[in-house]
Image (cartoon, rainbow over all chains, first blue to last red; front, side):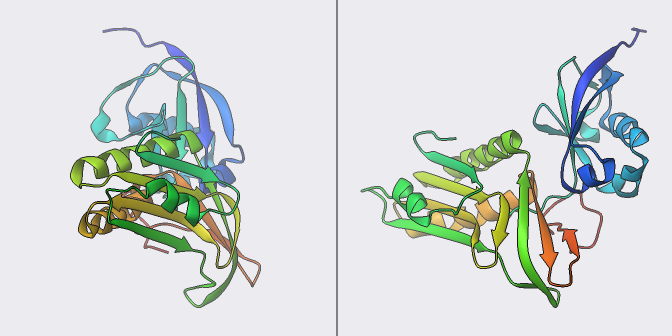
Length: 90
Length: 152
């Protein structure tokens, strides 16, 4: 079994997720191989208020949506993760 | 963002319908179909004062480009302009302008409907609605697949 290492990623929060997290962006350390579920869990553990809308959040990595179907994702230092609450453009 | 066939703009100033139709108008196109989304003064019986939009801009442009790529593949449309307003938007001003040209009208009429429906479902833009009573909410599009809430 390969050993997991940690990477530093930039996390961006938008709209309601930014209000609840109380920050627009931060740098955090995360495992370099994660599922979308685990990554969201790590992020909402840092900002407990986000748990209230966790079911309504999805993530993007380097400006592409990820989901459970994406399986395990390989992350690198410098990757950009976005916390995306339900959309309301248009 | 612009290519030969697609013009995408996210802007905090008033959107120009003229710019959208001028970009899309071509000698070989008999139709320019346009959708304009307007800030409405009421929602569920409450009086809306204004809207505030924000976007994950780099990703929003990429997602709009994906929509345009799909339109160009699916219909015989020649040019597409998609403009979205950001920041403070007063009542009656346009929050979104879409123009699509095609040799014959059916293609651009169908494509423009696809464009606004998909934009609401996939493009990372958010709208805060502020009411006369002093309260406000982040809205949710019913088209957004991962919202578990009832549509607001």
